[in-house]
Length: 205
Image 1 (cartoon, rainbow, N blue to C red):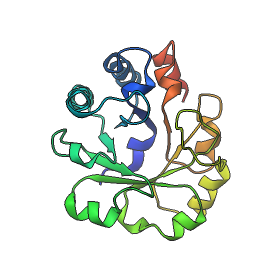
Image 2 (cartoon, rainbow, N blue to C red):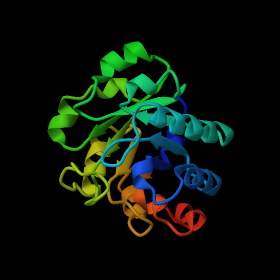
Image 3 (spheres, rainbow, N blue to C red):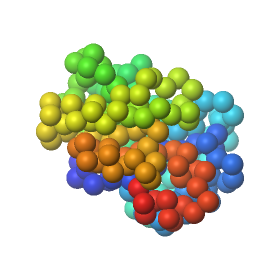
């Protein structure tokens, strides 16, 4: 799979995170230099069914135009209609080994928040891990307790070659702490969706 540089500025979004048109937000973010995009249409106020698929298609097309990997968040049924580049799952979603058999050519990402999850996860099957929440976050209703940049350091010590993206409460003032702890990149939601100057925000991440 491609080098882990695609994790550097990893943007996650669904319409429920946006106060304006998500298509416009993604175009601005793509122009500003995000390196990967995850379509995460879930939670309160999110779209379902045909509306979700239609938005996914529009966002997919933008990623294609800007050569940005398009990843979905555990909506496996969207993998083929949206011709995704990757799938990201949490600990309670479909197991990675099953997904690997179904989609052998896709990027596989897995969220890992603690030692127990790390011990029980098939690290050898994933292309990257999402580590966090690093800082406390309000974007995800069921977010776990913040683990701090130390968690990245711990993962990096145990798995020197593992591509790691930090997630949770990351913004322009603390992103360097996450990278300095050993992450290949940082993932953000609201810091971009709520930004008044996306160009400037992405540059400073």
